[in-house]
Image (cartoon, rainbow, N blue to C red; front, side):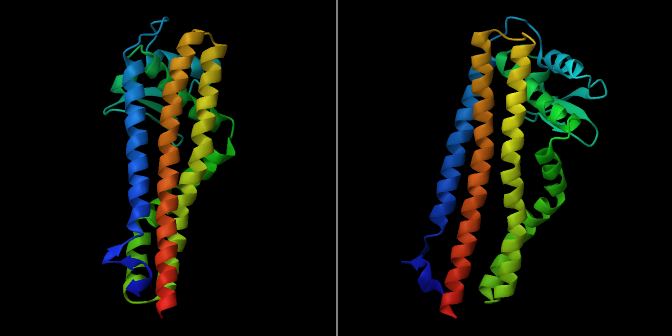
Length: 235
């Protein structure tokens, strides 16, 4: 079994994971650097992230969506279950370009929810199966690989597909939310043209983290397929 993907005692398929890991580190570093840069630039309007969020939501008639402050750094998110836009401490009370851009992005998700944006609904429905798949896939796969049980390996791969599907569906959801955010910031005159460029840089850098997550999942799936194929050839 080992001869197909082991060279000099080293499993070369780990290179796939290493490449994805390095790519993710680079993307995260760029994202955090971009966020820090524009966190130091105060917007001309002086509005905080929370105030921008409230104005955007009001412009869409979403008065039932609450804007809350949550602890942590870059923990901002929208929860469609209880209709809340949660902004981190570095966004909620800050009037920086980064804070306003992130707040607008989370409101973009609220607008998606209100308008019945299909990919958001699909992503929400995938959460439980994706969580189960990501936690159960690898243990099952390696049990099947260790004991040469192809059916168990296939079950592991099948479960992992749900985690990958979640990552892929997340991409249009996040890019669309950023598009809606930029449209609102511009249309409501919440930022000048120069400031919009800063907000766009922040959202673009953040979006790349989701691209990196999807790429990582693809590399894990490829590794599974290579290992399972090697195991079958050795039988």
